Image (cartoon, rainbow, N blue to C red; front, side, top):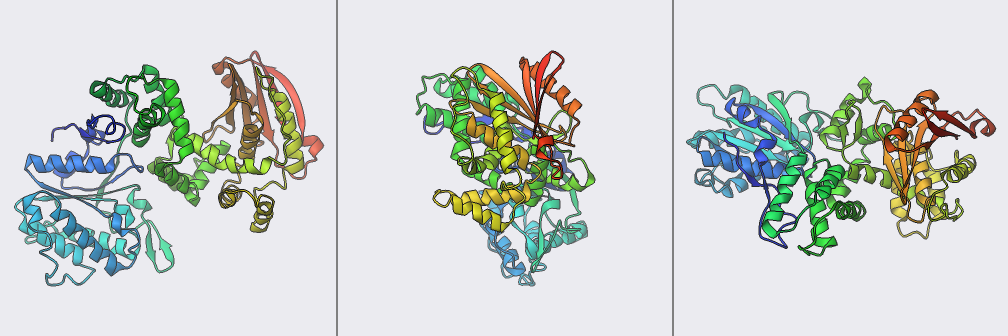
Length: 556
């Protein structure tokens, strides 16, 4: 099967031009051709808004245009709340009929709604098998079937659906039996993460109904080169140029996540520049667009935030923020789940980190912004800079005082009664409900990372007057890198929990960080969780030199 060029998204072009910018979508997953030729059934999963539906549209059109097989794509999105087996299976039949009618392939259109009165079709345990068998018998070419949003189906309906596919798959080569040549289930998750529910009991993943699965595939993100190709089409269409610095910053912020690649361009052109096509798009404009997206919380970003509440996600992100190791056997499934959702990625050392810089900022701000609401009454409103430099040592000494006074009463590892008492104090805040939600999230699911979260919130609150706090975290580092930028200066802080990494290794790690950044001094903040140790022993300050750098050791 040859590759074709098809549209990927229709985002930042339409209001200023009629062009739909194009990329070789089918090249993002070239293995499907061989699976179809091999009569395989497979899973295709990728994060939300990463181009799955566009990919299926392109693949379906290509198969039908080549004429060797028929292809049909159906979306099961309407099954989100269909837990009853009979209702779920009947709805799938309705969906198949609807998309057959809309397929624009005459042979398939003509068969829509013809099989709703077949013998045995009322039995939900065989309804799918009978329907697809009859359809495939009546078609003059073999059928390739793609079921988009397949992970919307759950519970007994999912179990029945997968069982019917498996059972007929096993006998499809016998005389008189026909079934789709190849079938793909497409969604956010691998089938191992589908949930089978019986009554109130949740069982998952499905044990055997889809052990016919030949391969589990995913769609790749855009490459750096893809971004350049996509944006140059905009330049060719309307004359507006993306500077090299703009493409660099798009890559930095998105790492090729398709929705973010397009959203950054759309935000820059339509909102920041108000469709002024005469202005060259620079890296600074893309930075502003990224900041806008983070603050605006589009549906894509809101769905990302919802995932932070899931226990499986929280276990992983908790460790990533704290710099803890997540390579034990108990984390295998959770790691795979978060990778499949596109929330995290692997760095060069095969350690998990946020999947891109925008996601990293969203995680940081979601977990710190609400905590900042509780800091206002605890921190003096002091200007911690003189217009040229930030007094970081003074800030961290103030934090030591704050930590000594509040460490064991601050809202993490707290219960519902304590949460409610804090909410009474902030009763007049308009976002009280959100604050409660985040407090519960931090206290119950991000307790390991809470120390880091509170330090980040403190720094964000006090280094006012134009300073920015940047965070960099990944599992297995034993520490978290924080960078405060103000004017032309960078202030590098490394935060660790005592026991995750030795003090000597932490100093060496920070020295390397300073060397890379071209800075001469840095701050190492170490949290000691030993409640039996006195505060006089825990709250200390030392200064040391290492590899030509001055390092302040701030113990809390």
